[in-house]
Length: 370
Ligand SMILES: *Cc1c(COP(=O)(O)O)cnc(C)c1O
Image (cartoon, rainbow, N blue to C red; front, side, top):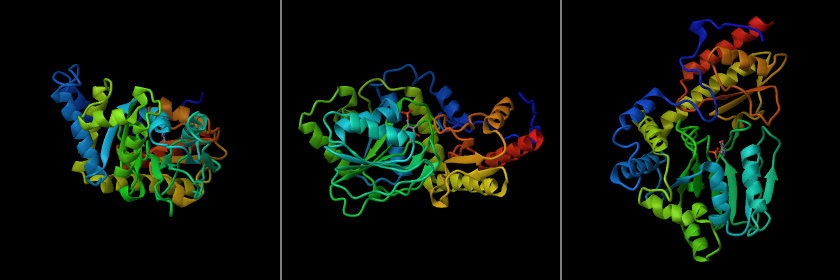
């Protein structure tokens, strides 16, 4: 192990660049401490906790400018559980999946293996690229706003002539850091430990009236569904600012505080401006270095929230290890991608100036390795 000590003036103010769990701001922790006596450790069926859940739902409506007839639905288990719930309660018979990385492929597998569904249409692209939607006889299109495993992201657009089909979007790392329009989407779901700097174990799904109608229509058919995966039960509970079973209250307090911070500073446009500033710096830097290049070739598909940088002539694992020794953590690439790569999150919580400090640190390490 090479020992390189990065000068203090180059270090970022916060060394957390992981793509989930991600940086939690200290003001969020302050909110948690403040809540520790009168909210934490109290019943989730009483007003103090229900008010936090209600505030999260209301602030999400504001952040995403949701039309009044949209629902904010919540449950336990994270985005991975939501895939299973969707195979029961959103996909009627047949779905189409754009697969361009680990997360999108897992949802496609869930649909493929569900015995009550037809075989899905799976349109796959090589990692780092984004597949083009194919118009097909399906009732649900499944997209991923940002593929966290590869750093490729897509613009959300409802396929032309898609009729009654729902557009269901995994926004787990994109939510809060990328722009989208509710007109183009029916379900926008995510876990809060990425762009919102909260904790894992919860899923949140923003649902259009068409999606709410679908949930009701499938529930009315009495198709078998385990209650913990039943979206109609989750919807009923969410409307009462509750979850079907006990939630992590601290997760909602951290999320509530983060939403307040985002809204106080100017809402989604402000968040997107921050992630854009961070990512433009990262990709410009990588383009200018002989040892680095953005993994995603098409600039339009380069993620503003999760940057993937291929390295050449230097060992990415060694650099990430040295950074870790210096308190800069989780810059390793997605484990299953198997590339000589660094992956850097630029969620709204990450200071754009810290991304600049980070690239200066990488320059310093590369210089002192050679
Ligand atoms: C992290 C992630 C998931 C899985 O989230 P969990 O909370 O671990 O279930 C799903 N999709 C995307 C795009 C992700 O980034």
